[in-house]
Length: 153
Image (cartoon, rainbow, N blue to C red; front, top):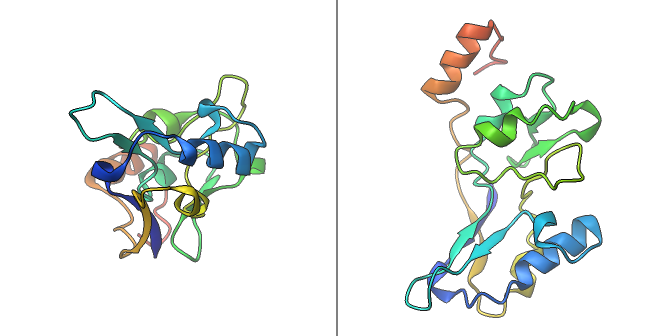
């Protein structure tokens, strides 16, 4: 599957990726509405570039099965099925399931590559990776405790 990847050493902190993401999906320029986040700690250090890794760990934690892996391998959210419990936001191992203060449902990177098109230094790029293993030991444990069926995993 194709996923977003980053070369943090090339990031200059221009935040065009954040702006592009927010404009594309929310029609606003607002860092809180971007599914990619850039943090510059110091001029001596590489930027911290954060976005969903598409690991899929959030899928099992969703009580309404609003999160799913699409045919292309990307983790997607069915907004109409989301109750806004935010379990996925707290459970995300990479802390890249986001929610803006005024939103009822969370959002995440869907590897659309719009940010890649606007990155002036090629710090962002798309790469082909294997679809991750569907569940971790922690997810298996949660499923066992809740009695959730593991849909073929």
